[in-house]
Length: 114
Length: 107
Image 1 (cartoon, each protein chain N blue to C red):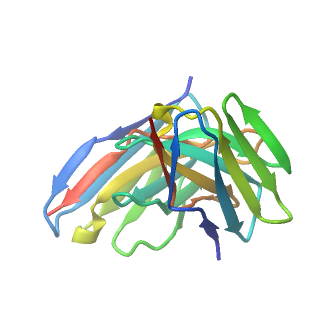
Image 2 (cartoon, each protein chain N blue to C red; image 1 turned 90 degrees about the horizontal axis):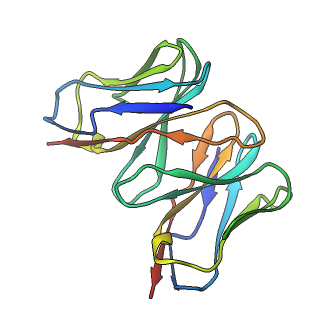
Protein backbone atom coordinates (compact mmCIF):
# COMPACT_ATOMS: atom_id res chain seq x y z
CA UNK A 1 0.00 0.00 0.00
CA UNK A 2 1.04 3.58 -0.56
CA UNK A 3 2.33 5.79 2.24
CA UNK A 4 3.41 9.41 2.32
CA UNK A 5 5.79 10.72 4.94
CA UNK A 6 6.47 14.29 5.95
CA UNK A 7 8.80 15.66 8.55
CA UNK A 8 9.10 17.35 10.87
CA UNK A 9 5.55 17.51 12.24
CA UNK A 10 6.10 20.90 13.85
CA UNK A 11 8.81 23.48 13.46
CA UNK A 12 9.53 26.84 15.03
CA UNK A 13 12.08 28.95 13.19
CA UNK A 14 13.34 32.53 13.54
CA UNK A 15 12.86 35.04 10.75
CA UNK A 16 15.74 34.90 8.30
CA UNK A 17 16.64 31.29 9.01
CA UNK A 18 16.69 28.60 6.29
CA UNK A 19 14.05 25.91 5.84
CA UNK A 20 14.03 22.39 4.51
CA UNK A 21 10.91 20.21 4.59
CA UNK A 22 11.03 16.73 3.18
CA UNK A 23 8.33 14.51 1.77
CA UNK A 24 8.68 10.93 0.59
CA UNK A 25 6.18 8.57 -0.97
CA UNK A 26 6.28 4.78 -0.73
CA UNK A 27 4.45 2.12 -2.67
CA UNK A 28 4.00 3.87 -6.00
CA UNK A 29 6.08 5.00 -8.96
CA UNK A 30 6.20 8.25 -10.90
CA UNK A 31 3.62 10.09 -8.79
CA UNK A 32 2.65 13.71 -9.32
CA UNK A 33 3.86 15.55 -6.23
CA UNK A 34 2.52 18.75 -4.70
CA UNK A 35 3.36 21.23 -1.97
CA UNK A 36 0.48 23.23 -0.47
CA UNK A 37 0.40 25.82 2.27
CA UNK A 38 -2.60 26.47 4.49
CA UNK A 39 -2.91 29.52 6.71
CA UNK A 40 -4.95 29.07 9.88
CA UNK A 41 -8.63 28.64 9.01
CA UNK A 42 -7.99 29.12 5.30
CA UNK A 43 -7.86 27.06 2.12
CA UNK A 44 -4.98 25.28 0.48
CA UNK A 45 -2.63 27.37 -1.61
CA UNK A 46 -0.75 25.43 -4.27
CA UNK A 47 2.96 26.23 -4.04
CA UNK A 48 4.69 23.69 -6.31
CA UNK A 49 3.75 20.82 -8.56
CA UNK A 50 6.00 18.16 -10.07
CA UNK A 51 5.28 15.50 -12.70
CA UNK A 52 8.75 13.95 -12.61
CA UNK A 53 12.34 14.14 -11.39
CA UNK A 54 13.71 17.65 -11.82
CA UNK A 55 10.39 18.94 -13.20
CA UNK A 56 8.92 21.62 -10.97
CA UNK A 57 6.06 24.00 -11.72
CA UNK A 58 5.95 26.99 -9.42
CA UNK A 59 3.12 29.21 -8.33
CA UNK A 60 5.84 31.76 -7.59
CA UNK A 61 6.03 31.88 -3.84
CA UNK A 62 8.70 34.50 -3.62
CA UNK A 63 11.17 33.06 -1.19
CA UNK A 64 10.40 29.34 -1.42
CA UNK A 65 11.79 26.73 -3.79
CA UNK A 66 11.21 23.05 -4.39
CA UNK A 67 13.30 20.19 -5.69
CA UNK A 68 12.65 16.60 -6.69
CA UNK A 69 15.97 14.80 -6.54
CA UNK A 70 14.39 11.34 -6.68
CA UNK A 71 11.14 9.97 -8.08
CA UNK A 72 9.43 9.77 -4.70
CA UNK A 73 11.14 12.60 -2.85
CA UNK A 74 9.98 16.21 -2.80
CA UNK A 75 11.75 18.93 -0.84
CA UNK A 76 10.56 22.43 0.04
CA UNK A 77 13.23 24.97 0.89
CA UNK A 78 13.83 28.56 1.77
CA UNK A 79 17.08 30.47 2.25
CA UNK A 80 15.51 33.10 4.51
CA UNK A 81 12.13 32.65 6.17
CA UNK A 82 9.62 35.48 6.50
CA UNK A 83 6.93 35.87 9.13
CA UNK A 84 4.36 35.34 6.38
CA UNK A 85 5.77 31.86 5.73
CA UNK A 86 4.07 30.56 8.88
CA UNK A 87 1.41 27.97 8.11
CA UNK A 88 0.54 24.34 7.68
CA UNK A 89 2.57 22.78 4.86
CA UNK A 90 1.11 19.76 3.16
CA UNK A 91 2.74 17.43 0.69
CA UNK A 92 0.45 15.40 -1.54
CA UNK A 93 0.59 12.96 -4.43
CA UNK A 94 -1.63 11.50 -7.11
CA UNK A 95 -1.17 9.38 -10.20
CA UNK A 96 -2.63 11.81 -12.70
CA UNK A 97 -5.95 11.84 -14.52
CA UNK A 98 -8.12 8.85 -13.92
CA UNK A 99 -11.41 7.56 -12.68
CA UNK A 100 -10.65 8.07 -9.03
CA UNK A 101 -7.99 10.76 -9.18
CA UNK A 102 -7.51 10.70 -5.43
CA UNK A 103 -5.05 13.16 -3.94
CA UNK A 104 -3.27 11.67 -0.95
CA UNK A 105 -1.94 14.05 1.67
CA UNK A 106 0.88 13.68 4.12
CA UNK A 107 0.35 14.50 7.80
CA UNK A 108 1.68 18.05 7.30
CA UNK A 109 4.27 20.27 8.94
CA UNK A 110 3.09 23.12 11.13
CA UNK A 111 5.65 25.92 10.71
CA UNK A 112 5.78 28.94 12.98
CA UNK A 113 8.16 31.74 12.06
CA UNK A 114 8.93 34.09 14.94
CA UNK B 1 -6.93 32.01 -14.36
CA UNK B 2 -8.43 29.46 -12.07
CA UNK B 3 -10.91 30.05 -9.27
CA UNK B 4 -13.24 28.00 -7.11
CA UNK B 5 -16.07 29.47 -5.09
CA UNK B 6 -17.77 27.77 -2.16
CA UNK B 7 -19.59 29.10 0.92
CA UNK B 8 -17.35 29.84 3.88
CA UNK B 9 -19.60 28.40 6.59
CA UNK B 10 -22.63 26.15 6.96
CA UNK B 11 -24.42 25.10 10.16
CA UNK B 12 -26.90 22.24 10.50
CA UNK B 13 -28.31 19.90 13.13
CA UNK B 14 -27.72 16.20 13.59
CA UNK B 15 -29.75 14.07 11.22
CA UNK B 16 -30.26 16.88 8.72
CA UNK B 17 -29.14 17.12 5.08
CA UNK B 18 -26.63 19.71 3.92
CA UNK B 19 -25.59 20.71 0.41
CA UNK B 20 -22.27 22.49 -0.17
CA UNK B 21 -22.02 24.14 -3.57
CA UNK B 22 -18.93 24.80 -5.64
CA UNK B 23 -18.55 26.81 -8.81
CA UNK B 24 -15.30 26.84 -10.70
CA UNK B 25 -13.46 28.56 -13.47
CA UNK B 26 -10.43 26.78 -14.88
CA UNK B 27 -8.34 26.69 -18.02
CA UNK B 28 -8.35 22.88 -18.06
CA UNK B 29 -10.74 20.45 -16.44
CA UNK B 30 -10.64 16.73 -15.83
CA UNK B 31 -12.83 16.46 -12.77
CA UNK B 32 -14.14 17.85 -9.50
CA UNK B 33 -13.16 16.34 -6.17
CA UNK B 34 -14.25 16.83 -2.58
CA UNK B 35 -12.07 16.56 0.51
CA UNK B 36 -12.76 16.64 4.23
CA UNK B 37 -10.40 18.16 6.77
CA UNK B 38 -10.81 17.99 10.53
CA UNK B 39 -9.10 20.63 12.65
CA UNK B 40 -5.37 19.97 12.88
CA UNK B 41 -5.45 17.15 10.35
CA UNK B 42 -4.68 16.68 6.68
CA UNK B 43 -7.42 16.64 4.01
CA UNK B 44 -8.84 13.26 3.10
CA UNK B 45 -10.52 12.30 -0.14
CA UNK B 46 -14.32 11.98 -0.24
CA UNK B 47 -15.40 11.79 -3.88
CA UNK B 48 -14.57 12.57 -7.47
CA UNK B 49 -16.75 13.42 -10.47
CA UNK B 50 -15.32 13.37 -13.96
CA UNK B 51 -18.68 13.13 -15.72
CA UNK B 52 -22.00 14.90 -15.24
CA UNK B 53 -24.30 13.38 -12.69
CA UNK B 54 -24.47 12.11 -9.16
CA UNK B 55 -21.94 9.87 -7.42
CA UNK B 56 -23.08 8.27 -4.17
CA UNK B 57 -20.81 6.93 -1.45
CA UNK B 58 -22.72 6.04 1.69
CA UNK B 59 -24.10 9.15 3.36
CA UNK B 60 -22.17 11.42 0.99
CA UNK B 61 -23.07 12.21 -2.62
CA UNK B 62 -21.42 14.51 -5.12
CA UNK B 63 -22.86 16.07 -8.25
CA UNK B 64 -21.26 17.66 -11.28
CA UNK B 65 -22.57 19.74 -14.17
CA UNK B 66 -19.70 20.47 -16.54
CA UNK B 67 -21.79 22.78 -18.70
CA UNK B 68 -22.57 24.94 -15.65
CA UNK B 69 -19.07 24.63 -14.10
CA UNK B 70 -20.87 23.65 -10.93
CA UNK B 71 -20.91 20.86 -8.44
CA UNK B 72 -22.10 20.10 -4.96
CA UNK B 73 -21.47 17.78 -2.05
CA UNK B 74 -24.54 16.41 -0.30
CA UNK B 75 -24.20 15.12 3.23
CA UNK B 76 -27.14 13.15 4.61
CA UNK B 77 -28.02 11.97 8.11
CA UNK B 78 -25.52 14.40 9.56
CA UNK B 79 -23.49 13.27 12.55
CA UNK B 80 -21.44 15.32 15.00
CA UNK B 81 -18.27 13.82 13.55
CA UNK B 82 -19.10 15.44 10.19
CA UNK B 83 -18.13 18.82 11.67
CA UNK B 84 -15.10 19.71 9.58
CA UNK B 85 -14.00 21.81 6.63
CA UNK B 86 -14.94 20.62 3.16
CA UNK B 87 -12.98 21.57 0.07
CA UNK B 88 -13.84 21.26 -3.58
CA UNK B 89 -10.87 20.80 -5.90
CA UNK B 90 -10.45 20.92 -9.64
CA UNK B 91 -8.15 18.65 -11.59
CA UNK B 92 -6.73 20.53 -14.54
CA UNK B 93 -3.05 20.31 -15.26
CA UNK B 94 -2.53 20.38 -11.51
CA UNK B 95 -4.90 20.21 -8.54
CA UNK B 96 -6.46 23.41 -7.17
CA UNK B 97 -8.57 23.75 -4.04
CA UNK B 98 -11.34 26.09 -3.01
CA UNK B 99 -11.10 28.09 0.21
CA UNK B 100 -13.19 25.54 2.07
CA UNK B 101 -16.59 25.41 3.76
CA UNK B 102 -16.62 25.00 7.51
CA UNK B 103 -19.52 22.75 8.50
CA UNK B 104 -20.71 22.83 12.09
CA UNK B 105 -23.14 20.11 13.13
CA UNK B 106 -25.15 20.90 16.26
CA UNK B 107 -27.04 18.45 18.46
